[in-house]
Length: 284
Image (tube, rainbow, N blue to C red; front, side, top):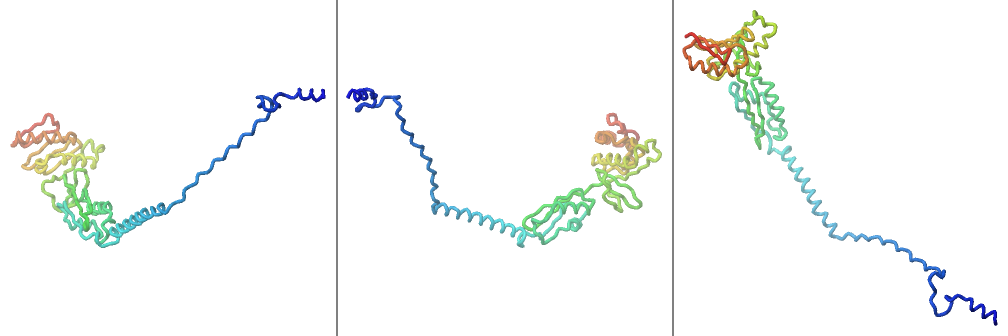
């Protein structure tokens, strides 16, 4: 009995009935509950309305395709927008018929397919007198050609004919009769000390520069442009009058000085504007 009593006393107080276990007494902790996995979101099934919305989109695409196809047919396939008439304006020496023949616009072709740049190049190449040409479409059936002709400022005598030269120095045509109001070049620079330095082409350029810078009233009265050297250019005017011009430099200032001299000394026979700041007139 004594042994049994001793054994009961040695029993820990935590094992006594009616009392809760003490903290830290070595009793195991209950295991943690595992984390629940995330439930994947469910995609709602497509309803009939979402399928129906495709209808208007497809219809719009079909309408766009039909519109483009129809427009292409109207421009290229139909007979509504084709070249039926070609006109030319701006001619002076040339005739409109000459311009139309040089343009060679394919009548009956779709208007949209006409290459206006090619037409312009063709006209300039076949008619050197043409300085510029503007080809435009005149919807629904026309092509219009607006041309600007070169104007001669100087003539070069060639046998019985005359070569026309414009203000840019371009020799663009040969005519049997000298146009009124355009001076003729007389080039006589063979004995000039500067002949090696200034060849005929350079002297021609100087003569063109002078003739192109003359005020219109004086240009009409200029009969001849004589070139003896680079700085020896003389103008022969109507009525036997002459003008010492010098070189082609300061030609605009020289033209203004000559205009003033002609007004101040209308009966003078000789004028000198080689130094435009000190012009002179003499003779009668």
